[in-house]
Structure formats: C-alpha cells, structure tokens
Image (cartoon, rainbow, N blue to C red; front, side):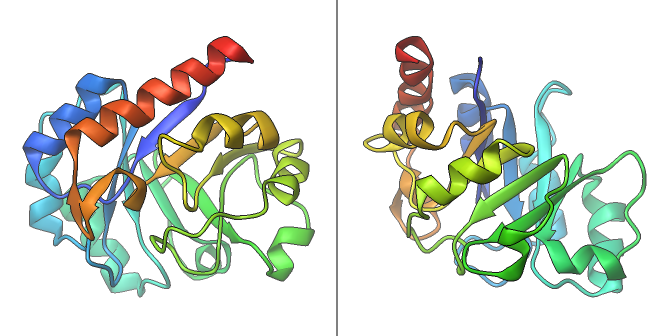
Length: 199
C-alpha cells in the first residue's frame, strides 16, 4: 500500500514546489499560532502552482468562524485540519474534506474515530512522537494520518509499528523552527517509499 505523505508548515512557493516534486501527496499551511504561521495571502501565493492531484491543507486550531471564513475565501483549501472538537462550531463546505486532529491522551483518542483523521501529541509541531502502539489500534479503525516527531530516521519504524494510512511531518524536515530544508523533505519522502518496499 502506498503511504499518503503530507509535508506541513510550508511558507513559500519554492519549498512547496520542491515538496510536490519530491512526491508529497499533500502540503500543509499553518494558520494557528506557530513559527510556521502564514497569512491567507502568503498561503495562497505559496500554493498557487500546486497541481490538483496534491491536497492543500489548512491547518488551524480552535479557529473562530470568521477566521475559518477568511481561509475559505482567500485560500480555498482542499482539507481543513483542526482539533476534533472544533468542527462542531464550524461550517465546512462539502467540497472541503475534514481532518479532525485526535490528540494522544485525550478522550477523543478512546472513542469512535472518523473516516479520515490525524493522530498526534498534545502540542502540534513540537517534535514529540506519540505512542505508536496506541496509534496502531486507531489505525485499524479509519484512515489515520500519523503525526508527531517523525523524520527520515524514524518514519520507517513508525510505519511498520503503527500501519498508518498516511504520515505528516513538519519540524522533522526543518533546519530551524519554521525553516524547511528541501533535502530533508526529499530524504523523508524517500524513507517513506523505502518503508513501503520493506513492508
């Protein structure tokens, strides 16, 4: 099975293009408080050459309805990724896929899961790995995108242990907080593809 790969926290068109060229299936733009935060205009410009086959993900956390409306209008994402409880208060058009974030250690991690979801630790972008054994039990219930502390050195082990539908990386492909490293992006995606061959 081909593992879905999302490169998150992108901020400029050149790095986005490099991620797409390296084989990313999705590119993420952070609209929440983070060293990787972008404005709606910055995200739109960075993503303007992304092909339709690659999903453009708006990454938020506890957004207001007004903040979400501005992202819809100005960025036009394919996916909204935000904490699971946020969706109850947001109007998400049918053409935008919801990716609820289920955080390790919360009640959401022990209940039913949606068809597609992201599983990560308490703090996004912190570089901390989740318990892959816990992740594996959730991966059997739906299409799980595994996030949290992944990089080229451990993603093979993570895929073998958790059997996720997809993987999500941000800090693991950076040379400094918020500064993506194109070579690390290539190495990460290469490691994912190697894991598929060994599976």
